[in-house]
Length: 125
Image (tube, rainbow, N blue to C red; front, side):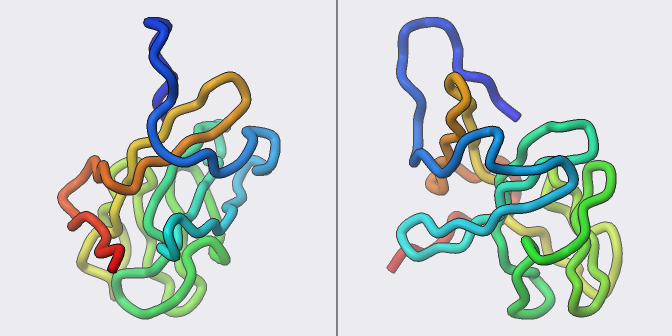
């Protein structure tokens, strides 16, 4: 989770929700330019933005269970680290993208043009 620096610059990315829109250990599916993103609040209350599609199958991760700092795909049980996007449980073996996220006040902003792990930047058509 990234906080906006106090240097007078505004937040980067799209306003996607309010911090209070997401419960602890829950995920919210949003679309940015028709690209699905999961905004996830981990067990400690940290907020993360990851690609919402499991890298193993075309299944929404935001419908899965959140435990600690991981999310589990309900389809086949693959688990992903919310910080790195790396798979922690087979059958997935490719990471999901992790996006730059800023909290400005209570507003959550996500920039899908800035992927913070080794996954490719989404093709936005």
